[in-house]
Image (tube, rainbow, N blue to C red; front, side):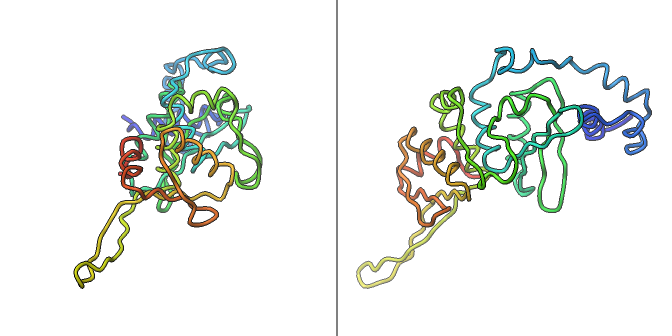
Length: 248
């Protein structure tokens, strides 16, 4: 018997075009077992792609995944024009890792998702030829070195689900922290703590998308630095708590 992680890694390797012989040698799984796993998968084709064939796209989950992708995601091309979608997550937050996996599976349920572990982080990975159809922002080089603009259909989804985009953005490149300040009351210096959301990104375009989405949910923000956004007003933090909340 083989465990679930071994099966997910094997299926992801098959989707990337690796041969059964190579996977068998690498994982120690028989070719017969690999063929059984492959043959029991649902078929995948262009008809599965919402952009190519007008199939269903779960908009809320997609908005969440879009935020994760813009924050800490990337696409990389493999054999046979198959692309790997990778969402990098800090391994201190198992809830974030699970949510990234759930969002990917909701958008593309016909292929497995696996977790690639490295020092201090976990990449949630899914292989599919049509990921560039859903993320036309894909391109060569880091995101902050090129223009990042949403397609009209993406903007319509974000307008309908701005909180989910913000959840993805803040959970990937942001945080909810406790700040403090002091005040003198009746001659005594007292310390006060208050929560604040921070979002950091080197891309001015992605920062602009975060600002736009915050405006859609009525949350004021300020820019203490060129690449950092802050939400600190009590009512604004309470609103973001409804949509985002702390990482877990």
